[in-house]
Amino acid sequence: MQIIEIEEPGKRDLQEEIVVGIDFGTTNSLIAYSKHNNPQIINSVGKNGLLPSVIFYDDQLEKFLIGKNRGEKKSISSIKRLLSKSYEEIKSTEVLDKILSDFVLVDHTSSMPKVTFGTTKYSFPELAAKIFLFLKEHAEQELGTAISKAVVSVPAYFDDASRGAVMLAAKIAGFDVLRLIAEPTAAAYAYGFHKKSQGAYMIYDLGGGTFDVSILNMEAGVLQVIATGGDNLLGGDDLDHILAEHIAKELNISLEPALYLKAKELKELLSFQNSAFLNFGSKKFKITREVFENLISLLINRTIKIAKDTLFDADVKLDGIILVGGSTRIPFIAQNLIRSFGVEVFSDIDPDRAVVIGAALQAENLSLASIRNSLLIDVLPLSVGMELYGGIAEKIIMRNTPIPFSITKTFTTYADHQTGMQFHIVQGEREMVQDCRSLARFELKNIPTMKAGMAKIEVTFAVDADGILSVTAKENTSGIAQNIELKPSYGLSQTEINNMLENAFKNAEEDYKIRLLTETRIDAQNVIAGITKAMNETPDILNINEKESIMALINSLQNIIYTNNRDEILTKIGELNKSAADFIEKHLNSGAKSLLEGKHISDI
Image 1 (spheres, rainbow, N blue to C red):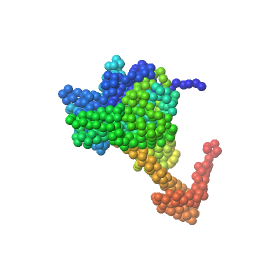
Image 2: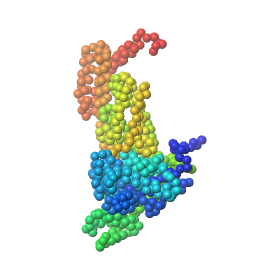
Image 3: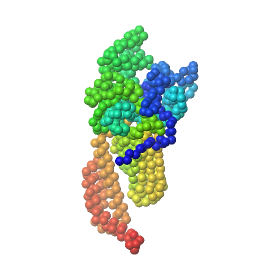
Image 4: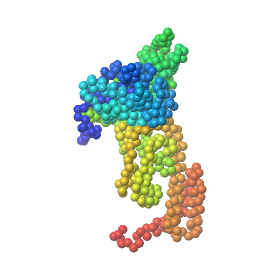
């Protein structure tokens, strides 16, 4: 058997240039590079290589300070949560609004709100770019070479808008992003090549501001994500907020930003000891691990439920759980995972560094210097498809399909001499378009005039490795084509994604009944239209009694077509088809005779 080496497109053009891996985190950001499969963290960016993802503008120095002054007024932490969010989303989400409590949002009528630093307005991608630029400059200084290419990690459940905002921030900072890699996938990449693990593993990633869970098959250099889940508005920051609110209540003090830092410090102490205390001015506060676990139990149980739902989607036997994210150092989390899933929990690699290590290894794998031939497969988090006649949502690429992926389906016209076709691209798991999210609309024009059903329009859906979707429609005989790339757009929050999945599961049976009813109504309309058209084209075939009998059945079907009784509609369709069967046969024979009459066999 011949072994064929498959390389990433464009790999030969990278020469020996260093490609870095970046973990752009909610709490901390890291940058690393790998050579000969030996990943190295760029430590100069901050303590132990962890750069706090904080942006602060010093009015006196008139410049940005990155990674400093967390908790102070006019500083922004957790900017990752704000990427791609609209003004309405920020104002309607308490956690997001709290991040910007010291700022006034401007340009709130546009799709990209801004805040003011100094005398300049900045969008959130522009501010996030400051963090990317800081990482880039320190990496170039430490490695002694210019760096322009990177693999950047993103939460697995980031939608197109958020992924695009991350890419935009990196591009503003001067990076060419070769690949967006899901954070859990990056962690699995690190474990897969360091531990030689095989089997089905869950990546439980509780970072500062996001929670991701992925189920992956890991074997012989192939990592395939088979299911993902998560919540990008849930993370370690929320644990800090819960604890800070408890402290404020117990000590009867105001809930100020500095208190969140104290709460974070207590949380970290309780990860290694059974009790901890801190001074708050003249007051002392002591808390036990047991009390802390009771405070956070509801939130942790929420992550466990998401993890169970994702495992249910994957439908595999779990071999182990890999912990990622600084918050997973809390012993309560590992204990609950073991109790809930009954498998071993791994935390061999520093949970703060697992993602950037995997990103750096993938970056090396994409460069010419790579000595490992490997394949990494991610998945599409939500199904995408298009609207059919009657408002039916036809799924073209199913949720959890490995990407990159491409599929072509053939559609046709529904009316005679139809010269255009409108396409409505939707995203979601429900059966009807009204219950899904609209992604885009476009039109294929100048289709050659033909009878209904004769035109063949090939529609290709393609999702690239970054999860960006493009749709191409092409009419075969004329070659006329139309393409649209579904670039990031605002409007879908992570909460909405979770709600879409939950609603799809809850309403699956009812949705299916509605789809069947709609399809049956469309079938009835087509039968009526077809028989009526045939009667108009060949009126002499039927005698008066036959015509009246068929018309009575048509009227009877039309009277019930919009009722909810599908069985009765099907019965009426059957009666009409049976009554008109002889007429349709004669009609078709008449049409065939007119086409053949007067022609030699050689002309046919």
